[in-house]
Length: 82
Image (cartoon, rainbow, N blue to C red; front, top):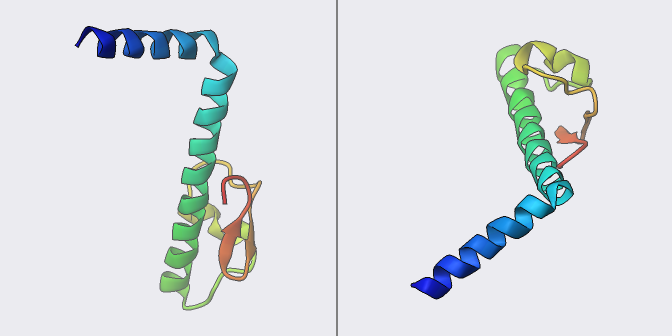
């Protein structure tokens, strides 16, 4: 039990001393979530309009937040985290 606590505390201490890694990990997760959100918006747009979107600007009403770093390629989102 004491060994598990020691390892856990040292892992937390390392993370606290390496904020760049934490921020990088957080950004990667956020990018992946946004990519999935854009893919979901593509499906929603097509379900509502009956047509596949060809430009990311067509999805603005379906997504909250900045998706300007994404494009649509072959019917799917392409950009950070995709």
